[in-house]
Length: 442
Image (tube, rainbow, N blue to C red; front, side):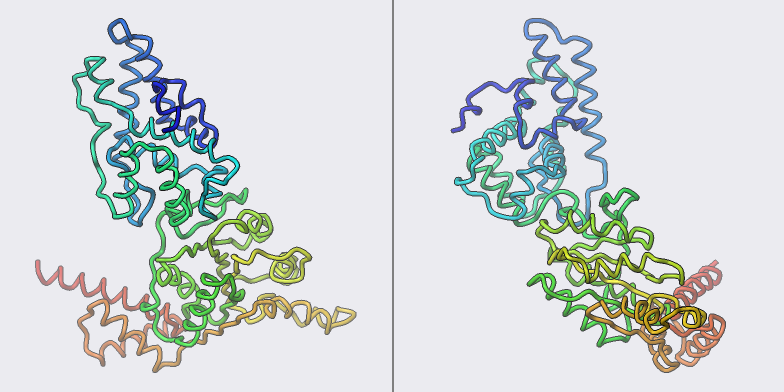
């Protein structure tokens, strides 16, 4: 048994944390330490006003955390109680040398800092197993003990994790903790699969993901198979190519990329959306991602460059041509309505000393994508087939002839017969149908 486990747990114990020290700066743990401090002051007297303030402030923070919406996808272990849930939530949000190490490899006793890790885990266990019943009894607290409430159902993995907490053995819990992080990850990459960047290049999770499946996308079978196969190679072997999806607007290029998250939802695939004006942040992002054990797709939607825009040279260097090798676990998937990405004007050919060099300079950008998938606008027969498939999935009550007529008229109005146009039509007709049903029922 670790020596720390034989010592009484006090308000100063968490201050000895090394690897997990950051959790002391979270509001929950700050409030908890304040409760302990005030309680220790009142050992031989009635609880002070400061104690009551600290205690109910902690209650308030816990209730707020409990009533926040829990992510629908598997996340960190929830513990046996509200108190354990909140500590574990802060722990699994913390990026530190311990969590980063365990994310990439299994921990063994041979690690040079194993004993220090064990000390930290011993303190963490004391916090997780803190006896709220004893504190409540000592201070004659009459209100409900919310700390011990079990508020979330457990998965199989979480049940074994919680058993390790109850066993209260630091070495066993350290093994369980490291194995869990190695298998599932931690932090934002544990809780989310799609991300964006802020202006400083910080990775932020996308909370309300745009749900899309490949089954929702009619047509382009070959293109879908190619990008799925390429992404599988990235996931399995850190192989695969950078991908450019080019073609007419509304043909499903962006939806195809987003649907990969659904297909590979049971893998570690993560996708980060890069805006057109954030291309300069990609080299910095590479350094952040290269040592993380996840396959990453950097998704650049609607990628085009104007004639005098020089940012395309940044992307050229990123794709290929730099002395520094790009991370094996990161690929760039981009979509564009332009075949060659960079706008080309006839005047440039006339003005340039060497017109051929100007042309090749601009055409070389798209050629640096290893896999180029072309999406063409559906002909009328394909367009009507897409409309009928979508109408059937939405439950539209229309004759085939009527649906064809509406679809052709809709396409003429929009000067486009793409999959996006078909989807917009079906949603319009669905709303129209619902309105008609409402009026006839009243």
